[in-house]
Image 1 (cartoon, rainbow, N blue to C red):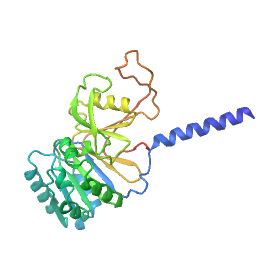
Image 2: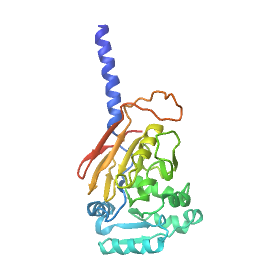
Image 3: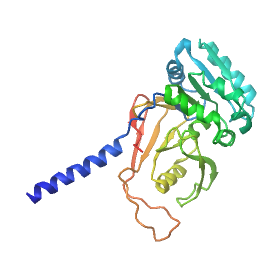
Length: 281
């Protein structure tokens, strides 16, 4: 009998580990995400899926181009692109500072949109403008209600709670070698890296995966993931997505405290049409 209960205990421990690693449902969240890793052209299938999820011909798309230095031109180009695709409405919101991001004249109209598209550029511009703002609260509210969140490059970075700023030393695997900031938190259990293969960003994503013990998702250029409410992520586009999953990893102490050490991180590479699951909180 003791052997029986030991086997039963092992079964439940193993099952708990597997369930925790397999992924999660986002609970009451009904929205989707289309996250593009940067580069040009953007994946046609990903852009089409974004419009479809936003309502197709009835879609109302809010464009947030503020990551770009030339945000006026960027906004105009996106408006033209979406309107030519046949959506009902596409409007660029030129929200240049935190005061604007908290103004009712900005916040109230945002509540009417079914899709939010963030243009590429510098993700730090977005976090500076929207951190703790009423506009960011609306983005989360509409996402929970079913709106689709989409965008490229900088948008990919801000989806994480732990956001890579772009600064630091990623030629080493050392603690605190990669600078981070608070992102928008739409993917609270994963760290997103953009331009992944094209710009050789493996080290800096791996450093953060080890230090913060979160899943790392490296999206290459001209490639996207479609994150669904059930926790599935489907790859779209020309190149690959690299996933570093530390769910069953162990972290032995390093002889040198500043060096990062780890055992048994799972590395997987996915291409268009393949699906992986994002770790549960």
